[in-house]
Image: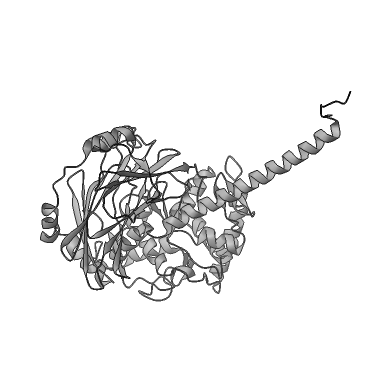
Length: 276
Length: 103
Length: 151
């Protein structure tokens, strides 16, 4: 009698398994790709009307307002290209400054100007928590200054020996593992195509990743509706690594900025950006 | 004292597209602060807008509109040089008006 | 630059007579408190006196499939059919589903964009209330994801 039952021999089972596995993989890959596309669509829909613009506007007002004990504006503040020159200044920070004989980043330089020109107590502002008092104004000013270099290429100067020293220092710090989890910046930011949940982790050791990572801050974070400067972003990274709380605009943070900024050389600045 | 809105009004092909960013906390009344206390609801409730003094737009918002709200609407007509004015009023009774010239 | 300075001149002052007169002459309607406080979108519809919403391709809802963060989700709706009185937005699973009511005057298009908060993955609905009494609807699910650490 002819059997109508299909013989489920081992070879047939194996073939079916392989086909299933292939289909599953394809399905997953397709899903992953469409997830990435969907997130890209979400981000694109938010591009027009970045709330960071509100902070840029606020920073613009603060820049020209006579403030502080001296009742002076910041309009003669030298951010590296001469007093009051804003265009292109941000993509050359951090850099060495003759008057303070220090390598300074944007926030550090804003504090210098706020103290020297306006009479504020820079140390006191540095000790103020983010989102409080003058720190809010520093973030707004940072957003404003960064907007004046939008789309320009990073070209941090490395001509002064201190600038080169800070680069080497920043590079060393980037790769130094510490803290209770033995994390370094490089733990998350030195390889391509890594992510934490849905957040892509830029490889900051390379130009593209450094531009995406360093060049995006100051940024408006939609998750908490706050405007974060690079100092605040670094502070939070270090918190996530369970490092001690870094001093605001300390050499540690500035050196990291020099390393990242130099790695981003030639990349286009996108700050102030929109972030999760 | 609230921070200024950023309003852009662009006229093209016989209509004027108005895009507004408003600075407002838009508290839902469901959030707890660091001390564990519920932060009371506080949000923009009414928005109106005018073209050259004539009201053309009105809306009511609840707590779900995002913090630092974004709004876009399109006016029939309007041309470069016209004035667009936007006013919001919130649940604390505060309000703010900002005006911009259409370009 | 001058536009912003002009805007600031106006902004620091109480509402201009222009805006004020506009407000007073508009159709008097109180804030739809009950609708905004309703805990389900069907209750919100009842509070607004809206019945039998029907799916319609005349109302186009534009929103992403996935929101990277539920705090800011862009939503937009447009309806080219004449006779739209209001456009409403709902997030079905929000504690209070009604998000916004946009009135359509004769001077503007029935075309609005804003951003909403979503507490979780949910359907988002746009409704167009027509002069002839119809309520057109368009709905779409938006997945709300949990992001990573930094970004």
